[in-house]
Length: 151
Image (cartoon, rainbow, N blue to C red; front, side):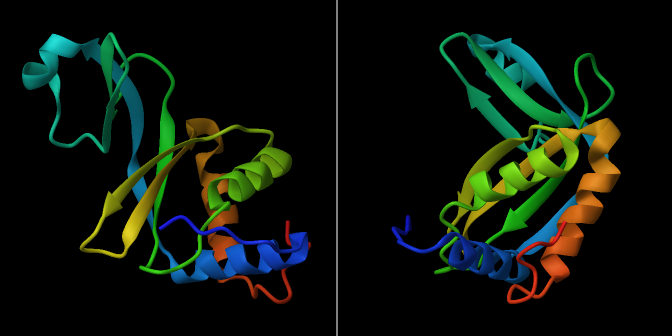
């Protein structure tokens, strides 16, 4: 469910830190990358170990483990509990990561109705993976009422 809320910046910060504490964080050990293939090659090329498959009008793009060509990413996932107001979470955390590390991220969202609902895969450049993941873990463990300036 999409929530609409009107709150101050401090209230949003506190709420989203609480959301992080309530969510399950999973960090993937493998390095991942995107592989593209034509739409008509889906049956032959889609991988069962891909975390995501998305498409546009010309190609499928799958996010899967391996050392193929192209940029490599470290991946972590948040699985949110049912009924938690995580509105604004992606923009909030992406902005924090940009300010702290200078990096952009990609986020792929999905839904599992049998496990709370929304989940997000986050990708960061491989070279920053360890420090970004340590920072995310620090945020997950922080006290939302005391962490307004946490860096």
